[in-house]
Every structure is written in structure tokens, then in C-alpha cells.
Length: 215
Image (cartoon, rainbow, N blue to C red):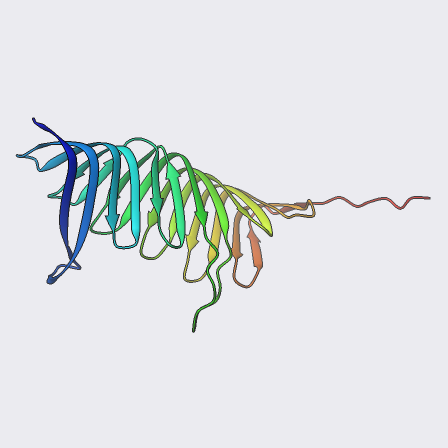
């Protein structure tokens, strides 16, 4: 096992199994050493991986150039024009562009302006202990989570999001808190961020305060 300074690794990925189409992944760091038999590179210090418009930074990582997979081990940050995600760790498939973020996950979804044939997208912030994220679609599944939007706060054991539909599903011990203090509980809550609607399913309860008239 040998160690080198100022590491630079280039990985070419075949897209959708088509040999003539490929995408370059550029990896830079302070130090890199590897296993030539297993084709695994160990990266350390200012690790930066660039794949298209996605940038992932960390302090330590392992990159399997054969399987096209990477494990990020310390203070991970993924930056994309539409989202920023930070976590303690990340297991990422460079070919499929999907990953699982683990521990102290914070995701910021940016405000997206309306485009031709597409609606604008509101910003929101997600806190979770685990997050499975698809970079191309922006769909995700989160565990032990809370989501904060200007119109509501949502909490649940699981949250699923479909970006194309702008649809959130809060599942298992779900709770929706509105700015006026109203608290809505249910086993499942569906929220459409685009048309600002919600629906609650199973074991529904609603709590709100009524101010007493003075005098």
C-alpha cells in the first residue's frame, strides 16, 4: 500500500450501459493510496468529487473504481443547483447517482423558479437520521425526520418525496403543525407543496386553540 500527495483520479462512467456515452468523475484530495487488486482508492484531506453539476466534499473517503461506488466518512456535503445536503456519512453509487446519507442529515431544497411547462418549487429544509436521495430525480426517502416549510412543519418516522409531483408523504406517527398553532395528527399525511393542499389518513386528530372574548 503506497501513499501519494495531491491526488487526482478520473473515473469514466458508461451511462445506461451505452458504451459510446460516458461521464467523467473528477476526484481531488491531499493524499491518496490504494489497493491495486481490489481497485479501491483511499482519499484523505480536502476530498472533492465532481460529477456533472454535483459536487461532494469530505475529509475522508473510499472510492471503488471498479464498482463505481464511494463511501464518505467525515462531514460530508453534497452541493447541487437545486439542493444542498450535509451529513456525518454517505454511501454513494456514482453510476446510478443515488446515495444514503447517515446521521445528522440536513437537506436544504432551494427555491426553483417556474420554467416553461413546469411550476415553481418552494424551498424547504429537512432534518433526518437517514436519507436516501436520487440526484437526478430529487426524489428521497427519509427516516426519523422533520421537514420545515414556510407554511407548515411536518414530523414523522418516515417521509417520502416525489419531486416531479411536489408531493410529500409523512408516514407513521405523522404530525403536521401549521403557523397558527394548529396540530394535525394521523398515521399518514399527504402534502402537495405545489397546490398547497394536504390530506390526513387513519387515526386523525386535530388540536387548535380558541381565544376567549374579553369583557
